[in-house]
Every structure is written in structure tokens, then in C-alpha cells.
Image (cartoon, rainbow, N blue to C red; front, top):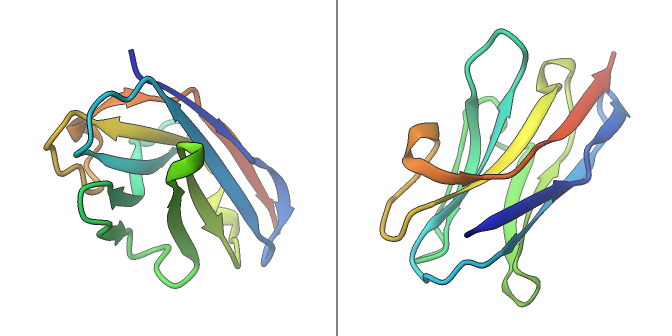
Length: 125
């Protein structure tokens, strides 16, 4: 069973940066998408960014373009989300997720099958 463990969340002032990490294990297939999502209480889970392991293509929500960067370290089975110029409305629980093989996940949560437990990001104004 695929396991995902996020880390790197915390408290940061507006304008600051954080780097989230997601370590993946037990992935036995090659062609899939890894995504980062976020959720605040009372709201739907929102796609933030994704990267295709198949071809390296990336996708970003309009609200984070130019501020967030997704990347992978295949040797460490880790995907990162570098978040710069954070704003109070970026505060949320952040989750990484993996799609089933050959599924192009994009920023759509229900295209992803495996989810981590989440890491909390708090941004003070």
C-alpha cells in the first residue's frame, strides 16, 4: 500500500517561505501524478500543484503561480513544494497525494487515490 508522509509545515509570517516535503513509499508503478492540496475547515479541498512522474509536466493553481514551485527528488522518493511570499490566505492543512497508474491527476482531488496525513501551514499577517 502506498504511504505518503508530509512534513515542513509550521508558522510563518506573511511574505515568508516554507518548503513542504512528501516522502512516498511502496509505490510500485511508474506512471502517475503527485499532487499537493490544501484544505481549511469548512471548505473543499483545493488543488495547489501537481507534477507528472511520467513526463515531468507541472500544474499550478492560479492563486499560487509565481510563488510556489513543485519538484521531485527521485533518489529520495520525495516531492517538495517550495512556497514563497506566503499570504494569510495560504494558511491551511496541506496534503500530498498520488494518483493510480496512468491517471492524469492535475488539480482534481477525486483523481487521486493515496493521501498523506497532512501538514499544517499557518501564516500570520
